[in-house]
Length: 319
Image (cartoon, rainbow, N blue to C red):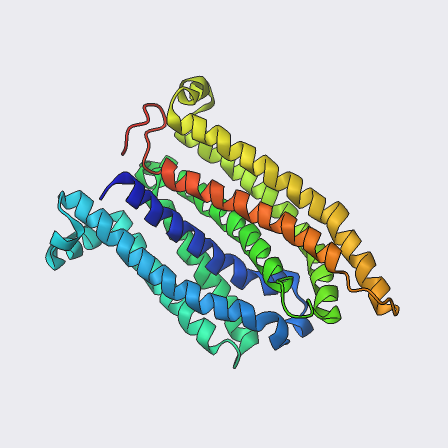
């Protein structure tokens, strides 16, 4: 298959697994125990989880099949079962795929049974999602690094992706809470959205610091500070610069959400609770627009990451 197809599969898988892990983690850190018990708030998340887990299993299988076919130098339909089993059983990326498939299967089962035992199953669903995200470390440059340096690189990559998943999942969850619906979100839902936005501020700060720190570590492992100028002359370095610009945009939007749009929504919701005649629709719309822009920037970053995995950091050749 051509590089665009491979990159497209990688992008879809990255986005899917980030949402599986991040949406599952959201109720645990942003909602109170009482809020988590409300079907109005969480049923949409659990429905999305079921679809995302099923899609993740399909995308992961397709991606592994395409990779195995590429390694054999044949088309996907020409790949035989024995060659596929050999590659899965004899490579680190194949082992990672097996763990990912098991984690996604467990997450799918948890999403189906979560309404019956939410207190026990919700943390298991989030943990399975994070394991699935962590296996992606073996599909990029970290997976090719050997020895002790490779171990450090993969740990840094796993932590980097886990923090990104929590952030991206929170954006998706807030969009679900504030999604357009007939008559708009209920006053109770708006109040919970404001409260969860405030609760996420601490978690979000931790995510940002973790992403920045592990990003520096991964950059040093892949490029090295002394080779930065050389890398910027290649597509990898230019894409990395674009990724940093998009990350800065996400930070600016998150700051606007935290310090301007969320307080404005809180004031509007309080006025409505006090007997005001107007629904805080303008404040909701403004926050929703900002979240959509933040989500678009996150998806663009994931697209760049999917592309990075096919490039040499200095020459821009496919690897």
